[in-house]
Amino acid sequence: MWIGGAAEATGRAGLRIVAKLFRRWYAFRGGGLDRPGLHQKIAPVRRELHAVLTAGLACGDRPTATFCRHLVAAEEALWTFTREEGVEPTNNHIEQQLRRAVLWRKNAFGSGSADGSRFVERMLTVVQTLRLQQRPVLDYLHQAVVAHRAGQPAPKLLPSG
Image (cartoon, rainbow, N blue to C red; front, side, top):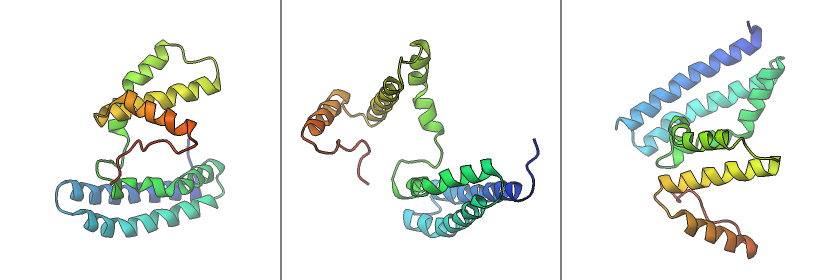
């Protein structure tokens, strides 16, 4: 399917920006940049992406505008890897780690309700995240229930960095 005009330009610009982002990320991972250097090198890439997404909102192509709107809404989260040690700019590692959970859900034939599906996806994510951090799952779940009953926020799932 051919995407014309502004929508295609938005996509091509996005791909160029992603290539720039990964060049900087690989320089950081390879030891050529420290974290402050990464922030400095990523800042113009971040501004450029914001400009492309903003332009994409008005490109006249509904799927492209919707995609851009979703990314703008999550824009701060897109850059978590620049702030948090151990967070990658892709989700490839996490997808591999969650594979077992995906297979479990498939073999269990899902759940009978939207609420049940939401519960299962969240619990499986919490369990795998804690396992990756080598933290006790039951301790975290106990703390979460105690906090909920006390009207407090749940304990942090990700370590402070």
